[in-house]
Amino acid sequence: MNETEGVIKFSLNYHRSPLPAAVIDSCAERLALLNAWRSILKQLGMIGQNSQRYGGLGFGNMSVRVEPENSRFVITGTQTGHLDYLQYQHVSLVKSANIELNTIAACGEIPPSSEALTHASIYHALPSAQVVIHIHDPLIWKLARQLNLPTISAKIAYGTPEMAAAVAKIVKSLPTDEPTVFAMLGHEDGVVAYGTAIDSVAQTIIAVYASALKLQANQSND
Image (cartoon, rainbow, N blue to C red):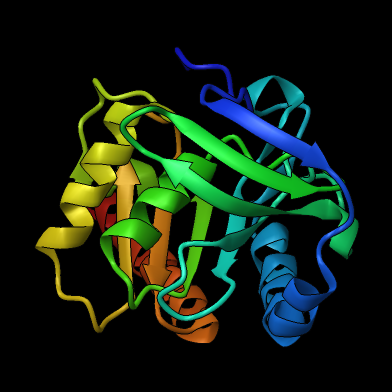
Protein backbone atom coordinates (compact mmCIF):
# COMPACT_ATOMS: atom_id res chain seq x y z
CA MET A 1 0.00 0.00 0.00
CA ASN A 2 1.41 3.34 -1.03
CA GLU A 3 -0.55 5.37 1.51
CA THR A 4 -0.12 5.10 5.27
CA GLU A 5 -3.42 4.06 6.82
CA GLY A 6 -4.89 6.25 9.54
CA VAL A 7 -2.87 9.41 8.87
CA ILE A 8 -4.88 12.65 9.04
CA LYS A 9 -4.03 14.66 5.93
CA PHE A 10 -6.46 17.55 6.26
CA SER A 11 -5.93 20.66 8.36
CA LEU A 12 -7.72 19.96 11.62
CA ASN A 13 -9.08 22.66 13.92
CA TYR A 14 -9.77 20.43 16.90
CA HIS A 15 -10.99 21.33 20.38
CA ARG A 16 -10.75 18.55 22.96
CA SER A 17 -13.94 18.51 25.01
CA PRO A 18 -16.84 16.16 25.80
CA LEU A 19 -19.52 15.91 23.13
CA PRO A 20 -22.25 18.51 23.65
CA ALA A 21 -25.21 17.07 25.56
CA ALA A 22 -27.59 18.17 22.81
CA VAL A 23 -25.63 16.14 20.26
CA ILE A 24 -25.67 13.05 22.48
CA ASP A 25 -29.43 13.42 22.98
CA SER A 26 -29.98 13.80 19.24
CA CYS A 27 -27.79 10.86 18.18
CA ALA A 28 -27.99 8.39 21.09
CA GLU A 29 -30.31 5.84 19.49
CA ARG A 30 -28.57 5.99 16.11
CA LEU A 31 -25.13 5.70 17.68
CA ALA A 32 -26.28 2.61 19.58
CA LEU A 33 -27.52 1.08 16.31
CA LEU A 34 -24.30 2.05 14.57
CA ASN A 35 -22.36 0.37 17.37
CA ALA A 36 -24.36 -2.83 16.89
CA TRP A 37 -23.58 -2.94 13.18
CA ARG A 38 -19.97 -2.02 13.89
CA SER A 39 -19.70 -5.18 16.00
CA ILE A 40 -20.91 -7.27 13.07
CA LEU A 41 -18.59 -5.58 10.57
CA LYS A 42 -15.72 -5.95 13.05
CA GLN A 43 -16.36 -9.70 13.29
CA LEU A 44 -16.20 -9.85 9.49
CA GLY A 45 -12.82 -8.07 9.54
CA MET A 46 -14.16 -5.00 7.73
CA ILE A 47 -13.51 -2.67 10.67
CA GLY A 48 -10.89 -3.16 13.34
CA GLN A 49 -7.19 -3.48 13.94
CA ASN A 50 -4.90 -6.33 12.93
CA SER A 51 -1.14 -6.56 13.31
CA GLN A 52 -1.00 -8.22 9.88
CA ARG A 53 -2.84 -5.43 8.05
CA TYR A 54 -1.89 -1.80 7.33
CA GLY A 55 1.10 -1.77 9.62
CA GLY A 56 -1.04 -2.70 12.60
CA LEU A 57 -3.07 0.51 12.52
CA GLY A 58 -6.84 0.68 12.94
CA PHE A 59 -9.10 0.74 9.88
CA GLY A 60 -12.71 1.52 9.03
CA ASN A 61 -14.99 4.24 10.34
CA MET A 62 -18.66 5.20 10.60
CA SER A 63 -20.67 8.38 10.94
CA VAL A 64 -24.20 9.76 11.29
CA ARG A 65 -25.52 13.20 10.50
CA VAL A 66 -26.54 15.06 13.66
CA GLU A 67 -29.71 16.64 12.25
CA PRO A 68 -31.39 16.17 8.86
CA GLU A 69 -29.84 18.46 6.23
CA ASN A 70 -27.43 19.95 8.79
CA SER A 71 -23.79 19.62 7.78
CA ARG A 72 -22.63 18.51 11.25
CA PHE A 73 -21.97 14.82 11.81
CA VAL A 74 -20.63 12.48 14.47
CA ILE A 75 -17.84 10.14 13.37
CA THR A 76 -15.81 7.43 15.04
CA GLY A 77 -12.52 8.72 16.37
CA THR A 78 -9.11 8.11 14.89
CA GLN A 79 -7.49 4.76 15.73
CA THR A 80 -10.43 3.24 17.59
CA GLY A 81 -10.55 0.07 15.50
CA HIS A 82 -9.23 -2.11 18.32
CA LEU A 83 -12.17 -1.31 20.60
CA ASP A 84 -15.02 -3.81 20.75
CA TYR A 85 -17.61 -1.20 21.65
CA LEU A 86 -17.42 2.58 21.36
CA GLN A 87 -18.44 4.99 24.09
CA TYR A 88 -19.20 8.68 23.56
CA GLN A 89 -15.57 9.54 24.31
CA HIS A 90 -14.57 7.52 21.24
CA VAL A 91 -16.47 9.64 18.69
CA SER A 92 -16.00 13.19 17.42
CA LEU A 93 -18.36 15.91 16.30
CA VAL A 94 -17.39 17.44 12.97
CA LYS A 95 -18.81 20.94 13.22
CA SER A 96 -17.80 22.13 9.76
CA ALA A 97 -15.71 21.10 6.77
CA ASN A 98 -14.31 22.95 3.79
CA ILE A 99 -13.59 20.48 1.01
CA GLU A 100 -11.72 22.94 -1.21
CA LEU A 101 -9.48 24.19 1.60
CA ASN A 102 -9.01 20.68 3.03
CA THR A 103 -10.01 21.76 6.53
CA ILE A 104 -12.19 20.32 9.28
CA ALA A 105 -13.34 21.80 12.59
CA ALA A 106 -14.18 19.19 15.23
CA CYS A 107 -14.57 18.61 18.94
CA GLY A 108 -14.80 15.62 21.24
CA GLU A 109 -12.52 13.69 23.52
CA ILE A 110 -10.70 12.19 20.53
CA PRO A 111 -9.85 13.59 17.07
CA PRO A 112 -12.03 12.46 14.15
CA SER A 113 -11.13 9.64 11.79
CA SER A 114 -8.61 10.35 9.04
CA GLU A 115 -11.46 9.76 6.55
CA ALA A 116 -13.64 12.55 7.96
CA LEU A 117 -13.20 14.65 4.80
CA THR A 118 -14.65 11.83 2.68
CA HIS A 119 -17.68 11.60 4.99
CA ALA A 120 -18.10 15.38 4.84
CA SER A 121 -18.02 15.27 1.05
CA ILE A 122 -20.92 12.80 0.97
CA TYR A 123 -23.03 14.78 3.43
CA HIS A 124 -22.40 18.00 1.51
CA ALA A 125 -23.17 16.44 -1.87
CA LEU A 126 -26.30 14.60 -0.76
CA PRO A 127 -28.49 16.30 1.89
CA SER A 128 -30.64 13.15 2.24
CA ALA A 129 -27.64 11.01 3.28
CA GLN A 130 -27.78 10.31 7.00
CA VAL A 131 -25.11 7.64 7.49
CA VAL A 132 -21.71 6.78 6.00
CA ILE A 133 -19.82 3.53 6.63
CA HIS A 134 -16.25 3.08 5.44
CA ILE A 135 -14.96 -0.49 5.55
CA HIS A 136 -11.84 -2.32 4.41
CA ASP A 137 -12.59 -5.54 2.59
CA PRO A 138 -10.01 -7.07 0.20
CA LEU A 139 -12.55 -9.22 -1.64
CA ILE A 140 -15.12 -6.53 -2.41
CA TRP A 141 -12.31 -4.12 -3.31
CA LYS A 142 -10.62 -6.59 -5.67
CA LEU A 143 -13.88 -7.53 -7.39
CA ALA A 144 -15.41 -4.02 -7.38
CA ARG A 145 -15.64 -3.69 -11.16
CA GLN A 146 -16.96 -7.22 -11.61
CA LEU A 147 -19.58 -6.42 -8.97
CA ASN A 148 -20.50 -3.31 -11.00
CA LEU A 149 -19.68 -0.99 -8.13
CA PRO A 150 -18.78 2.63 -8.84
CA THR A 151 -15.04 3.13 -8.41
CA ILE A 152 -12.64 5.99 -7.79
CA SER A 153 -9.37 6.00 -9.70
CA ALA A 154 -6.32 4.33 -8.19
CA LYS A 155 -4.46 7.58 -8.82
CA ILE A 156 -6.47 9.41 -6.13
CA ALA A 157 -5.21 9.06 -2.54
CA TYR A 158 -7.46 8.87 0.51
CA GLY A 159 -7.99 11.83 2.81
CA THR A 160 -7.24 14.41 0.11
CA PRO A 161 -9.34 17.16 -1.54
CA GLU A 162 -9.02 15.15 -4.77
CA MET A 163 -10.63 12.14 -3.10
CA ALA A 164 -13.35 14.31 -1.59
CA ALA A 165 -14.10 15.82 -5.01
CA ALA A 166 -14.17 12.39 -6.65
CA VAL A 167 -16.53 11.11 -3.96
CA ALA A 168 -18.85 14.09 -4.44
CA LYS A 169 -18.89 13.44 -8.21
CA ILE A 170 -19.96 9.83 -7.67
CA VAL A 171 -22.62 10.78 -5.13
CA LYS A 172 -24.16 13.43 -7.38
CA SER A 173 -24.23 11.08 -10.38
CA LEU A 174 -26.13 8.23 -8.70
CA PRO A 175 -29.73 7.74 -7.52
CA THR A 176 -30.25 9.31 -4.11
CA ASP A 177 -32.91 7.05 -2.58
CA GLU A 178 -31.07 3.73 -2.45
CA PRO A 179 -28.05 2.74 -0.30
CA THR A 180 -24.92 3.00 -2.43
CA VAL A 181 -21.56 1.23 -2.22
CA PHE A 182 -18.40 2.34 -4.05
CA ALA A 183 -14.73 1.39 -3.96
CA MET A 184 -11.65 3.60 -3.65
CA LEU A 185 -9.08 1.91 -5.87
CA GLY A 186 -6.32 4.20 -4.58
CA HIS A 187 -7.03 3.26 -0.96
CA GLU A 188 -6.18 -0.39 -0.36
CA ASP A 189 -9.33 -2.42 0.40
CA GLY A 190 -11.28 0.83 0.89
CA VAL A 191 -15.03 0.56 0.33
CA VAL A 192 -17.66 3.15 1.30
CA ALA A 193 -21.43 2.86 1.71
CA TYR A 194 -23.95 5.60 2.41
CA GLY A 195 -27.68 6.20 2.51
CA THR A 196 -30.62 7.39 4.54
CA ALA A 197 -30.88 4.62 7.17
CA ILE A 198 -28.24 2.74 9.15
CA ASP A 199 -29.86 -0.69 8.79
CA SER A 200 -30.28 -0.49 5.02
CA VAL A 201 -26.74 0.79 4.44
CA ALA A 202 -25.18 -1.93 6.60
CA GLN A 203 -27.39 -4.61 5.06
CA THR A 204 -26.33 -3.47 1.61
CA ILE A 205 -22.68 -3.95 2.59
CA ILE A 206 -23.49 -7.51 3.70
CA ALA A 207 -25.37 -8.16 0.45
CA VAL A 208 -22.43 -6.92 -1.63
CA TYR A 209 -20.09 -9.10 0.43
CA ALA A 210 -22.32 -12.12 -0.24
CA SER A 211 -22.23 -11.34 -3.96
CA ALA A 212 -18.44 -11.10 -3.82
CA LEU A 213 -18.20 -14.48 -2.09
CA LYS A 214 -20.49 -16.02 -4.72
CA LEU A 215 -18.46 -14.50 -7.54
CA GLN A 216 -15.23 -15.77 -5.99
CA ALA A 217 -16.69 -19.27 -5.67
CA ASN A 218 -17.89 -19.27 -9.29
CA GLN A 219 -14.46 -18.18 -10.49
CA SER A 220 -12.80 -20.90 -8.43
CA ASN A 221 -15.04 -23.51 -10.04
CA ASP A 222 -14.35 -22.37 -13.61
